[in-house]
Length: 152
Image (cartoon, rainbow, N blue to C red; front, side, top):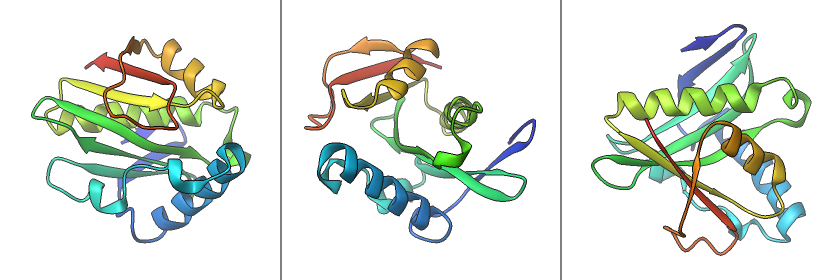
C-alpha cells in the first residue's frame, strides 16, 4: 500500500517498530486521560487470521500505526491509531485511516467501527470528515465518549 510518500505494511504489534509506536501512544494517553488503562486492543488482538496491524512509514521512517480487530464476520474495529507528533498536521492520520479501511476490506469486512474519547477532538473531527456515522456504545470502553461506524 502506498499513498504519495507514505507506505503501509502489515507488522507485528508486539515487535519493533510497532511496539515503540504503541508505547509512545500509551504515554500520550496517560498524559491526556491520567492512565494508560484506556488502551484496549492488546498486540495479540491483531495477530489472528481476521486481524491486522499496520505500520505507516514516511521515507522508510515509521510515523504511524493502527490495527484492525475482528468483531464478527462482517465487522472490524479500528484500534490503536497513532501518529508521532512530528508527523501530525500533514495528512498522515487520514492516510492511516484509509490504509486501515483498505486492509479491513481485504480481510472481508463490510463495515468498520471505532471509538474515541472527549479529550481527542482531532480524532473525532477526522472520523466525522471521513464519513463515519455516530452509533451507540458497542464496546463499553470507559474512556470513549463517541462511537462510529462506516460501511466499506
